[in-house]
Amino acid sequence: MYAVVQFIDDFEELKRACYKHLHEYIENEGGKNVDIDQEITKEYENQKKYLENSVSTLKKRLEEETKAHKQVNFPF
Image (cartoon, rainbow, N blue to C red):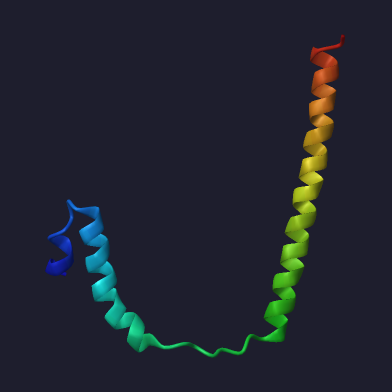
């Protein structure tokens, strides 16, 4: 830890020291092969579609509110 903290004032040296010391842990980590459950994937897709629909609905509502606001405040 001291080897990294001593470079607290020099960003580039701090970055190099962090990479040097973290590289040891990352090398030994290896890749993880995890099978993703189909139900989780399906639920993720459902949530994604729901949020995309919500965003589009909110954008439409904002557009309508903006038009109404302009008509009320700037009638010319």
